Length: 226
Length: 104
Image (cartoon, rainbow over all chains, first blue to last red; front, side):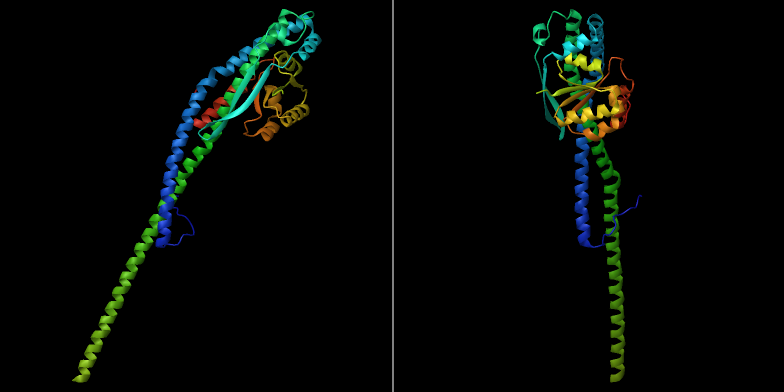
């Protein structure tokens, strides 16, 4: 692989110039992409710190919420809880927009919660209990946290994708494209030098033949005169 | 307009309804789950909360329909039987693949 060159290139001066231009571009692109990759990884680490606790927090809160729900179900019965749940009013309003991290669009959730009291939830008091209120409160909390977690996780996945493709491009340039271009430039250069030498030798040969001929002719005319 | 929705078993959906997410789809098998997901995507729901057991079952379908768009955002959560173990590993594997080093 070390001496691989681009195929279908003629060893001419024009091609050499064009190739040198391409090589410059590749090197410049490579350093730019490398910078992009490093910046992305830095960004990735920053967000990683945020996700660490978030997942387990959500799991903990949810667990509590499920427990509270089970308690309510024990007290009131499955059906009553389901019936009550149907009359609860919508509490979340999310507007998902996007934000740019180094050219990667990532989600940005604009969440609006009505922090609400018992009365706002929309179910009656007569056939419900405090356990049910508790469960509702816990689930409200978890929804909030779940949305935050989702935003962070999605961001991480998108960033990871971008990092991977950037990495692949950096490596392709560094290990395949740039060496190939270098080798091609070198081989064309050598081919041109070789051609120059050949030409030089050819000229010498022609000249010496001409000189010989001239000398012969001169000798002949001198002989004829004599 | 409701922009958050839940796909899960009856208890999960009931819980989230109590918490104020009105759009809930109770699913019992794979086909129902796939249909619910397609339905929700069609109605432009921006955040879909799904229990991880169901997500595992329709993983192939999910990857096909969702892709790397921002919306809809699908979030997997444990259901009331607890946390599935695979999730933390997924994240770790991803980090390892991206950075090349294993971080705890």
